[in-house]
Length: 237
Image (cartoon, rainbow, N blue to C red; front, side, top):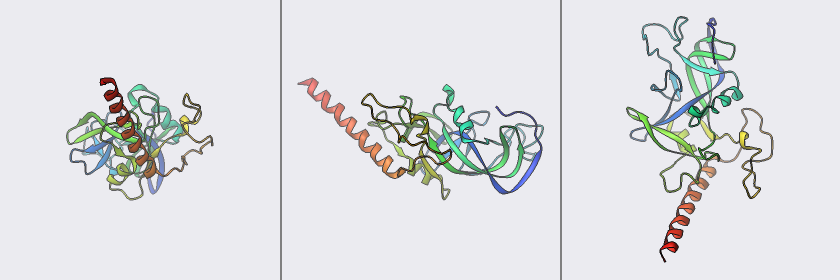
């Protein structure tokens, strides 16, 4: 994906990059964070964090003779492409502000410090827009892995709304929303489109109220559960 050695540079003003990550929540439920999808998949990082080398903590990050550091791509579309791989279906898209030392590559950057600005969920495993997070059942020591989930599949489960996930990062200004652009041409069997029919500009995803989306997702999940309970009662009669 990203190759070549590049040259070391230092940024005094933040650069913008895009990446994918796995959403996490602390064992006590008081903090949300992320893990990488490559060699750093077992290393949890916060919304504002500095990279460390898991192989040699003595050298500066990023280092020319090592692959350490945070990684990002130049465009949102390039990062979105990564989510198509089966092993990345449970990831989220991030927009990050890059600062400190970095090495430039053809497709992106390898760098020292990042601050998450935006978090976008994609599709649930069923194909619908993922509007909440649920416990995936996986994780690392001290952290549980979250799974982006739609309201229907989350029915009856404890859910973490997207605005709450953003709030629990502890970083002011983080916004969490659904990336609805890839679903803009999909419709349900009833003919209703899953998104607005407007073409959404890159980096400016639909402006629905994320808090309202989360509340509606919870209500829909409860309604689905009530419907299932009613069906079971009717079957018993």
